[in-house]
Length: 201
Image: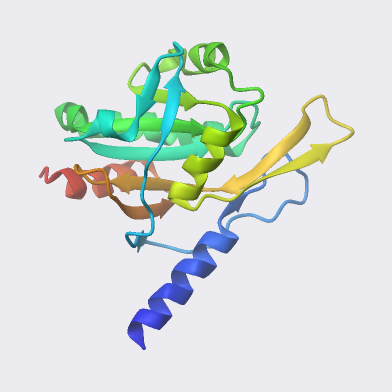
């Protein structure tokens, strides 16, 4: 019965923790606190390209704890804040940050070309930004059970936005996603999750 309640809680969290990027009146993420333990149904597998167009797969990060975030560079509000928290959390870790691979995966490959990622993430070279063709992006979303829905913005210069799952995924050293932490946490809170994951004091 407890397992059923946990499964229902996780399902509700993933269904409601969507970032309504750039849309007026979009519902904010549900106020769910804490971390969600992930099952092995989350494979964490991907085969994408980085900001230089070089192929990158999940196996390239074996031996490190991964911090994975899905978003897009044209998001005007939610993603920039969450990405800033990623960067600040690495600062909080100090030397222990070397044990973490911070990875951004776009949900908008149409606009997020390698050049766009190179320009956007120039502020922090520690964040590995990844894109790919739509098939590869969809496969990656499936591996993390990420929801991403394109929404037209007819009266905006953005043309469209993408509502997407707003979580930080923590992947262990073997490449298995273990936890999802809802976006909106502080850098200190995220750093604490990472410290526990890498075994740092």
